[in-house]
Length: 379
Image (cartoon, rainbow, N blue to C red; front, side):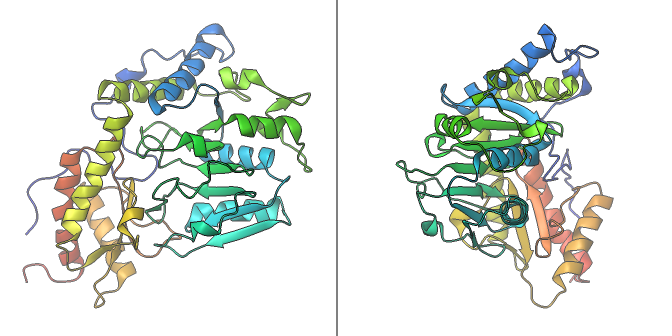
């Protein structure tokens, strides 16, 4: 039968993601609208985002943090274009965004010493193949496959290569070993539910040394330039952005950071996301038709929770689309179909801004929608 309890907020999209509980436009009333981002008030807001991100995430003081253009994609490409080229590079890929970085490295930068270490959707590549004297490019959490690296133990503390990590759907929801990471990127619209088009870039001292001692052999667009006369542009890491940011989005980012502090900081954010995953795991253990796309439990994402249709008697693609369409029409769950390049299935965002009560309320609706889609309602 149709469930009687609906999620209060049906926002389960994997990006842009649900706003924090209780959010309203009133949260943006302090925005410095109509002001230059280079004036003191605007620069102060940008510097505050950097400082509060550092404090919340526990990023070491010697690491530099910048706000950069074009969301996580811009931050990652800025890092790759600026840091790669002086060493061989291993690129890990197990879903669509990792494959994008493979394309950048092999077809755009055309690095001759590039090695692709890949795996199919639902699996993780052999991390033991990564060479410590190579640079490595990887996603911490595969947003379109629901597969994450389980930890940073595979990254040697003593390494000569740099680790360049796309952490956009992991940061604020998973513990990151900053001492093993040299360039880390994310965007505001993921775990804290911020608005789009702004990226964050963190650089270790080793990454800064690379910037100051190596000049890439390719032309460097203005949006990617982090050095002046061979030295790091320190202003960039104080909030002096390369292009014009939205101070409305900056205010929204500050609101998300404020909320995170108020609920208990990083530990609370991680606990909320993992709590949502546990609810789905408990439901899936009893399901006759749904399974996790991630093959290994220790690699399951707690943010982009990807489900496969495992009942062999149904058309997986048609069934997944029908479930997503029905729940959208019922205003129970929005935007939960699998990513367009991923295998057919469903994708539930379980990040920290999603309430456990809403995730729990959604799960019986999945069973109802499956029954409706397959003609098994009332059977």
